Length: 202
Length: 179
Length: 170
Image (cartoon, one colour):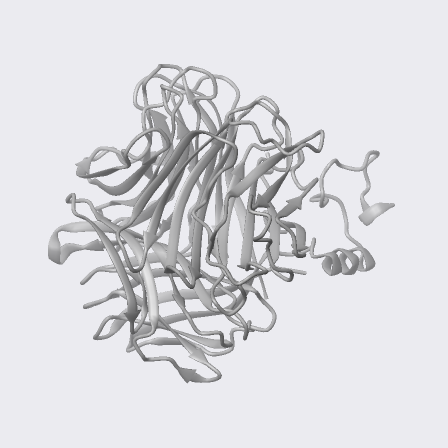
């Protein structure tokens, strides 16, 4: 009886979502990548009053694609920015490239772009909470550049507006990225919850 | 169990077309596809044509029944808009080059592909780099305005001298809805 | 450890309804809402959304938004606004062939009573002229309160089709 399913007919779906899975079925499905989540939580950090948030065990040799959520990120001068560690060394040079569309509720829309920046932006605001998701690609591949795509939204009470930003960036260096720093433009992250996932693959 | 289910993982071989077949079914209405590190097999800064859909007969739909709109976000120049209401593919703003000179990385969603009473819609986000344009990112939408049952998709480049490199990953997930 | 999308609520419309409400946000996690094949009963009307408080939609004029509207047939446009009674993020759909809407929302801070509730959205639809377009942006309800869900409705008329699903990202 497949997967311990107790009904009369095998359900028409790739993965059964009902019935009882015995140990061998669960192991078999896990091997096929069809059991369990397709997002695998690597690390969650909830912080208060920090200068940055580092993820240094990112399992870059296991995942081609990572996924990050940033929630309730607050502070002053509080852009969400990313830097990458390469073999344990933080890349701080102006070598990151990026391009984003930014738009505010007050009607201002801007192209945010740079071919030589010190970080990759994810959200651009001066104050109040920001939230975002980020995909990160090829971090563990020494032959390929490391890329991001992202989409954020934030409030900005200093300027009486709220704003979105979507786009992406790249560290155009064929290297292994083994860590990620989440940081503000300057100042302190008052509070934030950041989760880093691996996007499942076989 | 997670509502996001891994369905298929394909590793590319050297070819102008990458066909992912028999991945869409009645089990899911919405799919998420993740492309990482897509490269060209040759030393060329190349714009990728995009995707075409494969119907339940196994045929790649090449009719001019695709609409798309893409915001190209260029790190070194003004942003651009690319659109069509009668294309033979859905362009997603992707660019690539040989390994070491840049690649394409894309996440896109497909809505209602298997449903033969609905059009098939796409949402995409892409980050690319090549030797000609540095970082180019894209946000796009698309639709196949046919009521066809779609069971797969193809990523392709029309220039036979510019095949894709081997070793890139394309992973398809289904987003489950349990009623 | 396994992260996952956990379905919280779903609703498939099989006959016309005035609105669809999905609730169940009860943690500080990020939530994702996916809608597909949404159609309305009145031509040239758009889908709207509001956030719910204890299951009831907040219709106060406190929704701000900003979005880039991608259009397959003409120049893209910028759309923004403050102090609206709902999110104005979909374009006017129709009752013609396949003039439906699909979207992915990510929802942040909903459960936090001390913060505003935020969304990003990515939309693709066919409008009342059969043109493919879609807003990419986000919005916020500028009231510090805990929200537990989201409601979708048509600017005029009823929702006649669509599947609406809310997931928690854990």
